[in-house]
Length: 235
Image (cartoon, rainbow, N blue to C red; front, side, top):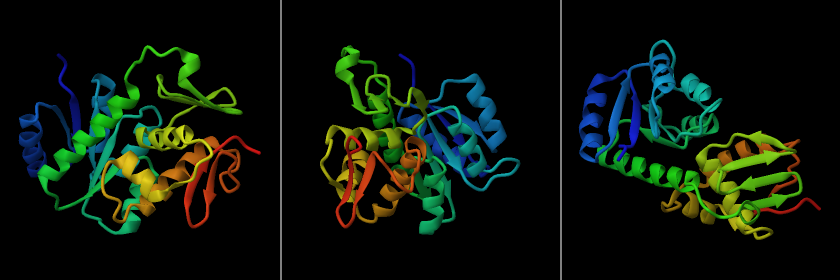
């Protein structure tokens, strides 16, 4: 049976050694890189299930690497950074990261986040035997294919991150119903809400940028002020 492979990208070698021990103990296979360019080379050679990506690195930093990876891949990305302000986290999530962990961190917490991301990733990428017609959610020109984990707008494929897809699928399955940010966060992140409002807002904004003709005047993902979000056929 193939081991799940994690690509760890960090120029701090002590962190790499530490996480190598913790992740290996959980049965994961670890690939190591010390800058963004080296990480991109690994991705050309290996099938990777998850990436742990430091922000501050030489040659190519984590922000640039994340944006480059997102051009072609939906693999989950957990960003690490000593920059822990809300704006730093929002920026990391807005360029395509699925999670953001500040340094210093508890290795056991990071391992738990890795497991959570992998469960969600495999859930939404798992092949099913449901007939295509039963497995598509259609909203005029927006088509969400659950089994293929694909989204099409006007016939064109739109690349969403696993987290973005999970939010869109959740809203689609509750068509016309308003879901609060807390409901969305609890369902998609499987964690207590706490301060997750900004995180949900950032992901919704990114979804709109990808599926809406005019993200400032969305047709599909609607804001219900003071309550949350809903997805419905445009009126």
